[in-house]
Length: 163
Length: 408
Image (cartoon, rainbow over all chains, first blue to last red; front, side, top):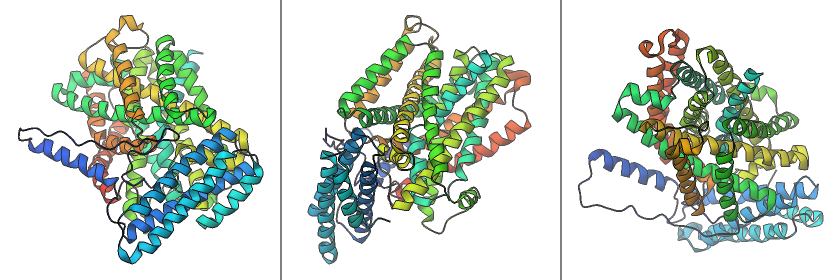
């Protein structure tokens, strides 16, 4: 189970508006030890979902895995569309969710600060994610077209190195 | 005939309580990440929830009081307040996640905009709860949730390697990323033993008017209902392992879980899976919203219950309405239901001792329970699970931080 980068909030389907976390208000009173410990614990939990900052090898590995996973899921969805195993609504909505997620990841990988030694790999992965998003857009636009689905399945299987 | 209908309470608790969005997310993700290696955790969670639900139901049958009533009376104001605050926070997070899940499944069925569907779901729940009796609520969602059995059919049809499945029931520690493995163990136990389940279960027993003669029915409800829920959890994990691990997919969306059924069973299977998820998550929404209202009403000594008309228990009715609106506000911000679920489950693990310690104390209190107090078996199992609960509660947050909330 992989969460999105700082992933409690993310754009949801068509109404994609991300919402940031507001800072917790600070009072002038000295907080009791237990309260401070609780606040620290909450921050630790919130930060647990974040992997922002500079992209290092570990983050790149995670993001690459996410791109591959989305591609393979898209391929499985396209496979089911091609064989009439799904409904048009399901295919359209699921393709859309994956499309938005891959588009966001493509943007993040294109813009985030990166270690110089892996910058080329990170940008290449951004292009992969953008290509994935564009391919999923085709499935989203033609959720019951078996011909399109067959072509999408082939492209995504190749992109994600799916088994 | 009444006894058969009585069993519906167990079925609702199993489908809408045991199998909720937390189980859907954690069981499928565990299968997709570790294959069958975590199967052993599910029976441990199932036995735990059976043991404590049986105690809650027995307390309700003997005293005519739900758990929070008894807790408030027996463990004092401060301890009960701690349990109340923690349970309400976790309840609200869980309710928001379940509502988001309902809107997602409705969107997968209809293609309508997500935010409109959140509003539709909240209004729909408010109307259903207002006009429907407790009996019809449990029957409607309980039996609708039986569509989830399609996951069991899919698990068999996928033809997993049953020898490997069997080996998964033997507890072991993996060499492959043990920290993440431990995080999943905690998450699976937390999803199986979510506090709201026992609060809802015991209050439901009071709503049904259980008496000491119904202790057998209570036991049957807990065992049959949660075993059914546990079977579905096993099926979810098998589908996760067979479909997603095999294809290199890390499921991150509710729709992905249904996709696991579409592949082996086709369009009808997919539709049954989505409808099953809708009823399971919808039933859990009702459980959580009632659980939150029950707890507050019982703590404050208000009139409560669905057998009373809202006019007869106005503060109880206002509480569940406010909880629904608050949860809607949370989901409307755009928070991801699946991610919120993960946080809700982990926080519920931290709150587990505050729920289960008082239950054990009350069920073991001979002055309160008379001859229906815990026997040796219930006490033995209760103590073993209490130790387990303490361990998972202490390790939940550190593991969440160490694994980046399951990212690696």
